[in-house]
Every structure is written in structure tokens, then in C-alpha cells.
Length: 365
Image 1 (tube, helix red, strand yellow):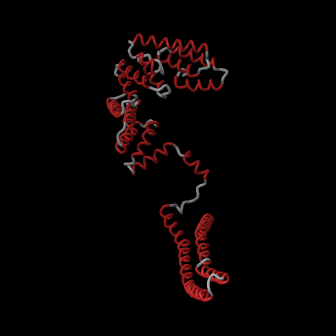
Image 2 (cartoon, helix red, strand yellow):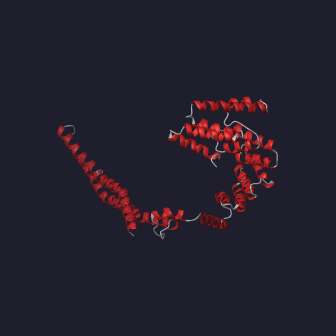
Image 3 (cartoon, rainbow, N blue to C red):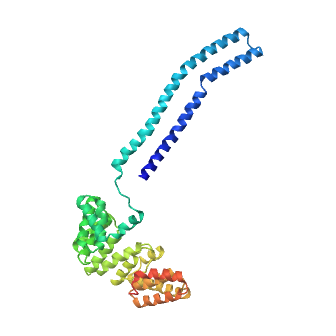
């Protein structure tokens, strides 16, 4: 009730603030009307007569004419003022009554006047107090009532996949494609869910989805990775290595998926240097496999030598560890990891950056 009262006062104040200039303007116009002008003209006639500029007869005639106009203006003034007052009263009534009525007419159907108060602290706790299963159930109920809500299926699908409900995730991804349209990432997500439902095996059905994704976008990372995985599972390691090596050649140095592809490439026996420069990659294209591997190993050894001389380069240590992992030399990777931690042990910030970068390499596991 107090809130409604405050809103009412604010509304009245706003209305009067809008009407006040109108009232002041009308008053000022009434004070400086035609009567004041005629009075000034009479005074001017008297000054001209006193100065001898006009004869007395002409002055009398001018006074008579000005007096006649003054009387006519005085007769018209009450009617005009009365009409002006009526207009101002009508405007004030419209503002005082019409605006609140219009506001209520809009608020009642669009607002929630009967909603009880919900304290801020409780509002903040409510979502966190619900389990993920409860939230998923609510979304599923919404989609049961609104099956064509493509955005809802897009939100639900990855959550079901993370919960291990792969068959339901596959259905959700299919509905997302049906109601949102086809795209490379949606096809790739569907293929991943199908593979997950098959225990990680890239089945023919999953491979079809990855092929469709690559047709839509030749650079779709997830689809290309799984196509390499399909080749590996079929025993075509050379094809898998070719797919993954091509991905690394085009990948930016800070691509988050680079370590995963490098490890996969090392698994099928296809060493490749991480994050080579464009010039180096151009030179490597014309080399045979033996020369390319020799060049890569030479680069890695030069990097290791440089880091022994200057161990403050955290990015360099991470590149070295990744390179050994890609080359399949896990022992050297572990040794480089230990050397890196020893080199930056006295610098807390560099040590933190190093440990963050090493998390995804799996050497501590």
C-alpha cells in the first residue's frame, strides 16, 4: 500500500510539473494583451501633442479612435479569458484522470499486481537451491508443451549429454536441427552425441553427420577431429594422421583443441611440431616425411637448448613439453616439465602460469 501511495504522489507531481508552465504562460499573455498596447498609444498621443508634433484636433480624434478600440478589446477579453480557462481546466482534468487510467489499463494486463514480494536474498538463492535434474525436468516439461521451441532444444541437448543421457541428447539435437535449421556445428554436435551413445565408437550414422558438417563448413573442427578418429578406429592410421596434421597446420597457436589433436596425432605415429611459423610450414610442405621429422626434431632440440640458457620463458617450456608429447617421447616430456618448474620456482606468477598450461597435458596423472 505504501508503494502505491508513493507512485500516486509521483504521478501527481509529474502532472503538475507539466501543467505549471501552461498556467504561467496563460497568465503572462493575459497581463500583456491589447489593452496595454492601447494605453501606450494614448500616452504617445499625449507626448506628441505636448511636443507640438500634432494639432489638438488630430490629438482628440486619435484619442477617440484609440478609446473605441480599447473598449472593444475590454468587451472581448472576458470571453477569451473564459474560453482559455475552460481549455486549461479540460487539459488539467485529462492529465489528472486520463494518464493514471491509461497507465492502469496498460499495467493490469501486462504487469503482475497480485505477485507477492520476493526478497532479494531469496531471489538470489532460489535458482541455486534447485538441482540440475529439477531444472532439466522443468525444461523438458516446457518442451513437451512447446515442442517447436528450437532454442529450448538447443539449450537442453548439451546438458543431457553431460548428464550421460546420450539417447535423449541425440533426440534433442535432432529436434534442434529440425526447428532451428541445419548448420555445421549442429550436425557435428549430433554426431558427437551419437558416438557417445555408442560408447565412443564413431558409427556409420555418426560419421554421416560429421561428413554433413564438413560439407557445410570445411573447417568445422569437431567434425574433422571425429573423422580422423573414425579413420583410426577403422585401422586407417595414415588417413587419421593426414586429417589431424592438416588441422594443426591451419590452427592458431593458442587454439584450445591443439593439445588434443597433437596427442591424437602422436598416438597414430605422426609427429608434428606445435605452432610452426607460416614460413616453416611453407618450407615443410615440399619435404618428404623423413626430412620433415628431422627438421622438427632439430627445432625441438634448439628450443630445449635455448630454455636451458634462459628458463624464464613459460610459453617456451609449454611448447617444448607439447613437442615431446607429440613426438611420443613421454619421458622427455616429463623431464622438460620438471626442468620448467625448477626454472621458475622462484617466480610465483610464472609458476602459476606454467602449471595452468600443463594441466591439459596429463603428465601428472
